[in-house]
Image: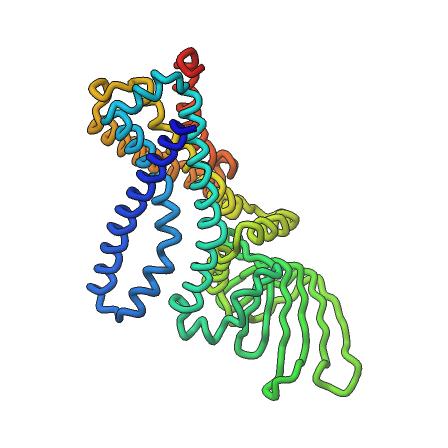
Length: 363
């Protein structure tokens, strides 16, 4: 128990040091950059705070890797690792302890990417990125949580279930027209609306409810297709896709399930969801990669400088491969789970291979 506490204490001590150093470096660079751009102090601090969840998501895996590397090298430096192993403490238990410590960071990373970052994105869109034009056009940003996008135009409110930017098609469209006196005039509901040319849209399977502003009973008509004018173009609707980054993990998962029933390609959105899972799993993988150094407990046989260089190479290699795999997934070349999971699982297989190679020593 005492030996386990020693390893755990060293790991978290190194983790706190790594988080503190990287946090201060990133914070200093970001704040200086903001002030050099001539922004006021409140604006710089707001942008900095809203940017941190994304930066921390990239920083946590590196901190886990550095925590394991530093803690083990500290134990080597004072010959404590050799003493621990000589006391009958198995390599397997060290793997287990480091993995258990890393699971705390896995949970923290998932909380950050799945909930804190979406909330920061929501505030960012409301307080920073919302231009005067968008403030007049968009009715609300939170309505996506109910499964629909809403916006306000010159003489109508409109909602839609999804915008396919590849085919420029709006799915499940509803348009509510109003008069100058702000009374309802008619309602149009269509299965989809396809962009034709500037301001022109083709509505399919249309149901029209007209005469809402007259004393007579409203009339309902159905038409297979109608061509009509809308003030919006595909570029305007592309803005709504950014709202997906404001949904927490569970609401994004529900949204993707609803979209899958429409038959459209949802690979890009599944990748956004799976990123949160696999980038959390990466914290565990990065923490376990340096554990292989315990099979050379003598400090002379495995220099600290060599370990640092290898750590940097592994980090750069991971992010290059991961970014490339995600790009392939966004293009539809590979399945979303494969695009986001292949690189983390490849690095995890290295951890398993190293452990299996020394399995006789791990008992």
